[in-house]
Image (cartoon, rainbow, N blue to C red; front, side, top):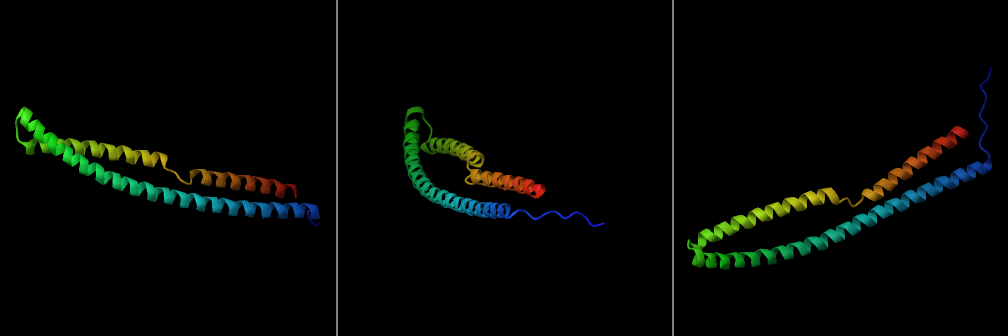
Length: 141
């Protein structure tokens, strides 16, 4: 006994399926291009922000050093003690605050900076939809 042979899809279905595959390939290419553009934009933004942060950090460090030195001299005159001891106390305080700030920034970056998360999620949704659609089309044939 021969097994029943499933009929070939009608030509109109083939055309539709080929058109869908072409559209899916075009969509995938567009998503890849979008991901590339997002990466380039994130890299450019990172370069600009990094340069600005470095320059601002240098100015801030220089200004704080001068301010702490003058404040240490003032405190030594007002409350006694050596300017070196006051400078060391202010330096310790500045280092502590700086480390806390860097820790906060680091945690914030790890939590919030996800440059491709939306694009990757859209790609996953597209792939899931295509698998479901193609699976249902194959079951119909």
